[in-house]
Length: 404
Image 1: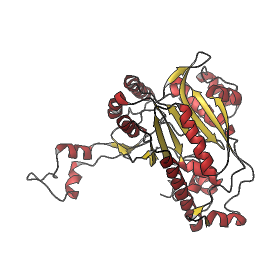
Image 2: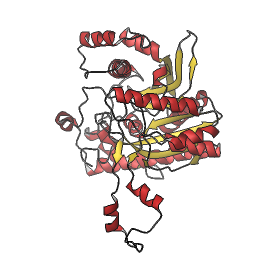
Image 3: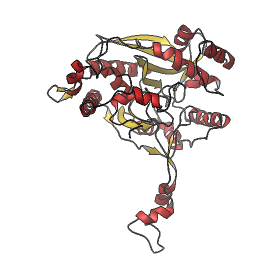
Image 4: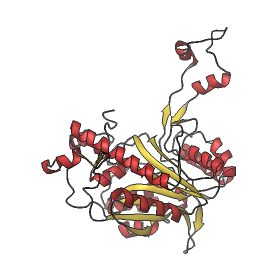
């Protein structure tokens, strides 16, 4: 599964701008409690779904000494703790006055770390060791991501199947969405290139920077300076392709400001006190599954040659209401290739004036034993948005980044 499980943010999505604050629907205490109940019920249903499939739930660290090397992801640093400050908090010291414990313990406390952008690296280490299916619900963190669709801190569901192809992960996902929504799921399957061509008339595999900039200018799209080719592809996909995916925005969704909907948003239903999370849904969920990505977008995925002779990344993304909900991959298992990709990422970061990120050599070592496998990440905040008919991510968070 690629670590880039949220799409690149469009430049006109301001980071916590005043206009967004003014457009954010006001939340009452009842609204927040209803959202908490929805999330609790959703997580319980997810866990029961995977327990029935004999998956093991795992919990991996939120802070790592390594970080994602992907150039278009910004990790949040966890500041190191200086030794001088350790003395203030240590209750016991050795004869020299240093905090008790071995030198490795002190070194770990002093080293810089990063909040995870995904639990993928440690989960693959467990997968290599156990060779059995695993899942996790966890928090992830990404800097510079705050908009109607993004929050720097977000909730992720991730799972992996050893000795499984991507089709098995797709089947898991569709069954889970059907179970959570109580509705059939209609899936449009289309390649990345075909979707890009349909909405823009451009071929992402051959798109040049000049062509992309000319298209953006003709369509009056705002864009940052000094984008590389892949940055342009991501930007145009985000602005022009994504909004049309997954049946876009259904009409006549209930709004929580409507008095007649206040009870259904705030009242629990069912024997276990679950809140209805599907009242706003149409008769069926209409999803778009994008497959066969550019090789530059492979990240931690395998590649193969398609029927037209192009090299494509064995990944898919699933969209509902124009939102990327899930990102899956047939996982790369060759450690040498993975290390080369990490190093190439860091070289790209240098060329873009970005800081190279520490490579996870624990993952590289574990990949010696990693079986053929597939995995997926699902954005749970966005899934709650879709199931509840909400338009802004802040509506499904008790406290978004502006109020944390």
